[in-house]
Every structure is written in C-alpha cells, then in structure tokens.
Length: 120
Image (tube, rainbow, N blue to C red):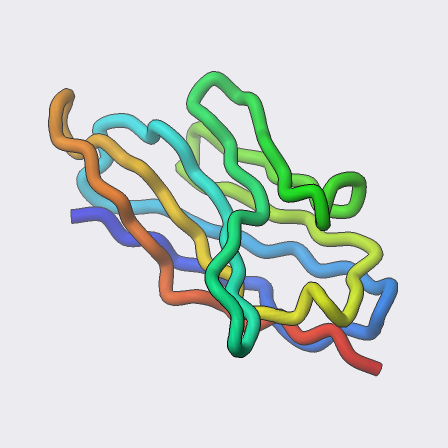
C-alpha cells in the first residue's frame, strides 16, 4: 500500500509564511500526479496546486503568485511553500497522490490532513 504523511501546518499571522511537506512511502512504482487540496469549514474541498509527472504545476487562481509547489523526486516528497498568507487560506490542507503501485494499478491516495490557521 501507499501512505502519504503531511506536516508543517500551524498558526500564522496574516502576511506570514508556512511550508507544508508531504512524504509518500510504500509500494510506489511511479507517481503520476501529486497535489495539495484544502477544505475550509462549511466548504467543499478544493484544489490548491497539482504537479504532474512531467513537472508542470497548476495553481488555483486564489493562490497564484503566493504559493509554490515543488517536488523532491528522489524522496517522493512534495512541498507547498505558502507566502503572504491570508485569513481565507485557513483550512485543513490535504496531500493527494495518483500513484501506480504496479505498471497498471493506479490508485488515488490521501494524507491525513494538516491544519493551517491564519489569524492575528
């Protein structure tokens, strides 16, 4: 099986920064995409950023220019650098991976989530 473990959430003041980390482990043949999603209270889960195997990254309009997603291919780890945080960024952030465990078995995996709170 595959496990995704997030870390790096916390409480930060508006305008501050945080870096989230997501490490994938287990029976990984190949990672197709990895992404970050978030869910605020009373709202649906939404895409924040997604990175394809080819290296391209797409961001939600609300975070463009403030958030940067990067990946360490050797360690199967992705990062989300969040700058200029706003109160509306407050949410539980989830790591997602679409991962092949064999050449033909594709699964959709989620981390446990990490809370990000932006407040003065």
